[in-house]
Length: 261
Image (cartoon, helix red, strand yellow):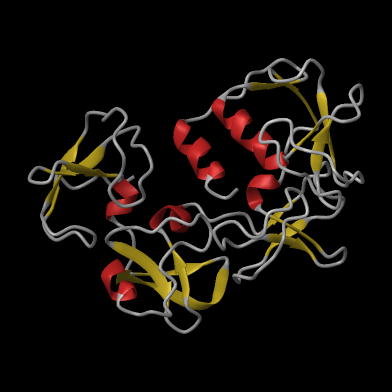
């Protein structure tokens, strides 16, 4: 493997030269993809920012597997801001980077550096979510998720089964089937179709639609819960599945999910 150069005088993503740091930086985000750096990095000594080794060498033009029609080119985020019709946030994760994005000017398709390095899967097989493979639909459309019942999710790209007319957010794929929640005495189970009218979520007290997925208690017939409410408390570490493993996540994820309700 070719060793990393000790310095990069004219990096694509930054205005100043960058120096190679062999020592691992702890809990430092990459300035390009915003992901945590867990090893050697490049750093700007003037701005005190850090970059993954592979982020420094991102190409000015890439072929993305989720957008095979045209190559994506690096553009300044400011140039997209000046265009009222241009897509300014990543089509996959919703992130809007401050400096640079990958963009197709023909299709108005925008991707952040993180989703360029690690593209979302073209298809996901999860029998608990759906009996057929779910394929990514690389266009932004207005839709209602069949699992959580929420219209879109910050206009991000969904996964679809065309044979069944089944459409979901990526984050709604693979939800646990049975969970323990500290706000109820019994385990609650997931169902794709609640089928009961007039029930309220046991967490937020809003009405739960009978036509979409939800969690219910087989012991207490009146207890139901939104699937996105379960998303929040799973991520925040207040839910364990039936095997007893405690799920944990950062408060940032909690706030992101509450923002869509």
